[in-house]
Length: 149
Image 1 (cartoon, rainbow, N blue to C red):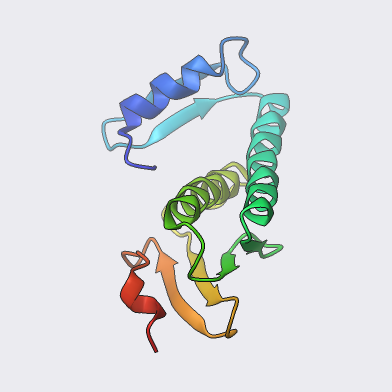
Image 2 (tube, rainbow, N blue to C red; image 1 turned 135 degrees about the vertical axis):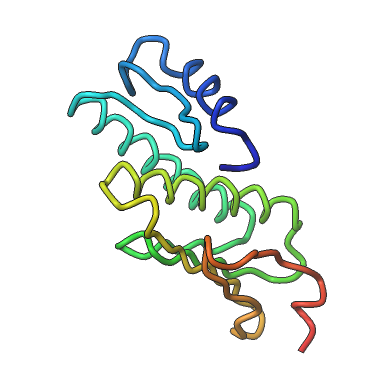
């Protein structure tokens, strides 16, 4: 996720899990996956953490003139904004929100081999869909050329 290896992610998780509120043990596997050993309370803490991240992303988006919608089943992510929005703000929100949704879905029991997230960008000025893609099936990026009709 977000360009980190499984080992790097385990190190980052360990930094925020010193009091074991999210897992008893977290380790990287040879296949690049990560295993969490946790109890029900820790599982609930993880779900809440990622739901909070998503809510914070929605608020940050509003502050930056971006409408961010997440479907109730966490399978669709839609951004609506004008092409005048700073692209770095969008990229940051996209990365954090998509990774939080994916993690939340894994902690809700979704099969890590069978998930999909539809990502859309809508032009706030015209209502036209600029881009749509499905993760992890497609490489997804937003380019200035995408705004041209």
